[in-house]
Length: 251
Image (cartoon, rainbow, N blue to C red; front, side, top):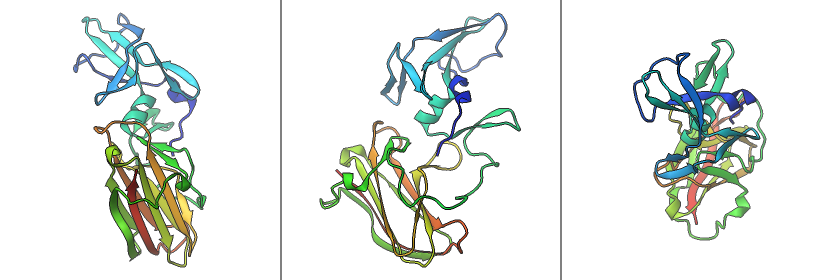
């Protein structure tokens, strides 16, 4: 669901690594490309000397700034922060500003009909959406969060669970629309800032069942392993939801 332009390829946001108190950039200061690597939560994300891929380009992992007082500061691409810390990234023409996290200008909820099939290969945090047939659901699940739970509501259904990679790399959500109206299924992760970051939304027609599967694609046990879902009335409907759903983990 992230939509970024090439503008972000050159966008840099400062992270003070070696010093927490900095000063404004001065003409006498020095900016230099660094060959530093990047380690997040004890996991090597970029090796020293490697570049960072964004929109088909290869960016320096870091830029260093030497202040007039001799202190050294590191800058990282804002896109990297978005990708690795699961923070929404945007740009406001009106404010002429980088936007990290959800903003008041974001429209709430789905805007129109969504596809009825998942976007295979879409990524959010350490998860990647895969075809449901990829997972052998005939085996015994390693974790059961919900098992054929039936809910009728006009406020939507919200749930989720934590899935440790050590217990299996697949999370499977199965939703049956028992109602008479189209509904929307959102799956994603909590964000550090603002609203959750979702995979592309999928609609479910009345009487149909949707199965969505997600593979833990990288990451470490110290990183976010939560997966949440939001089932609501589709755009243009009364909002009534009558569903039966299961959420399980498989190896």
